[in-house]
Image 1 (cartoon, rainbow, N blue to C red):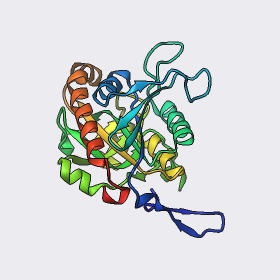
Image 2 (image 1 turned 120 degrees about the horizontal axis):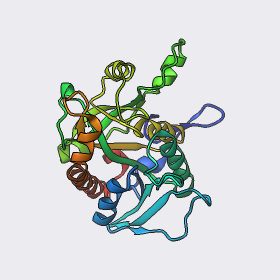
Image 3 (image 1 turned 120 degrees about the vertical axis):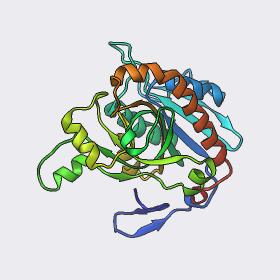
Length: 265
């Protein structure tokens, strides 16, 4: 992502914004699944908005409230209108992120959720990671330069003080639209040097970078991708317990952020 507080105008001049120096005021938290979102909603005592800020017909749900000096907005993409399942994946994540930034003008985005982890990279069930980088593993375009565009590598916002204070693990995140992992995906994930994999992060990172809003990614490990158990089985088995670890981590991150500027994170 662009250096903190900097963006280029039409003439190419770099403008230094004051947002990096003043206390953070508005945060948007994006969580893909209702099971992951509701514990955070309850933990932060957020209220569901009755009249949506978003276009008519979309299933996106906003919860809002305050934590000390922070205005908190949690956006859940809602249920698919046809099949009734959580609207997971990169398309919903991209749309929700773009709309939330346009409507709410946040100082910071937090993408929180569960993820698969790789034991070869030191991940265990229940571990909570802060992503240092986000990239895609299923956008294969074997043409020079387009191949790099497909990977779509983005740096997450660096928050060394937050990581040190909360003693959180750091790892690279790889994103794709499938829960399972094909051999092609595996080779791409290895090339991405990823510790965790999800279905939203890199899409949110792309939109956040496009609109120059810093983003932090908090991922809790539900399943070991390079383990012996089937991914779907292990994910469902551990979802409830790992979600509890996730919502505790999100609450700790919010508490740490309160009263601080971006540059103090």
